[in-house]
Image (tube, rainbow, N blue to C red; front, side, top):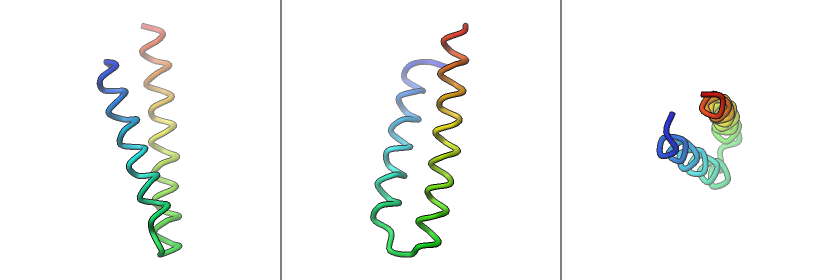
Length: 53
């Protein structure tokens, strides 16, 4: 994965984090936080993978 793709993932995560702070519906905010956690885990995995290549 290229640095540009990794940066794109970081931007997407930041966007979802901002949305989760702005939501007033507790269920929607919770679901969005779960999505952010999964995206962060994917990003860590992709970073580890690109460092080992």
